[in-house]
Image (tube, rainbow, N blue to C red; front, side, top):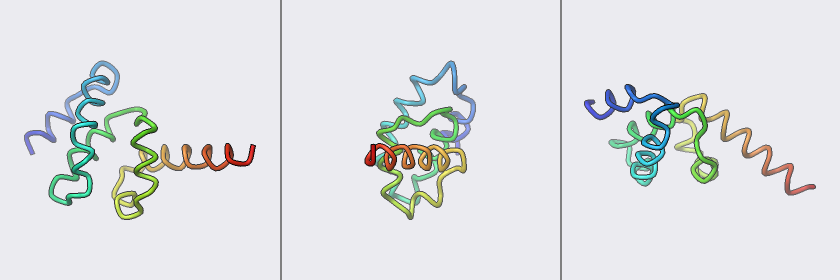
Amino acid sequence: DNLLARVSALSARSDKPRLERLLAASFPYLGMTELRDVPLAVMERLEAVPAVWLKQLAADKEIFKDLPRSVQRQVWRLHACMSLCLYV
């Protein structure tokens, strides 16, 4: 709870590098239900989740349904773009 409170206090703009580092460190634990809240909170704070993470999220339907709606939209946009690029 303390870590989640600290994450929610971070600014998406001024703390972006810090949030991205925290996402990189916590992303591997997304599959663990007990630890999932940390990377979810970090992604929710970021205005734009890096594409490398979005691609991995698109591949896991179980985790995708737990994502914040703003992150789901980013996955949908990236997935649509990737699908269109295959046909161009």
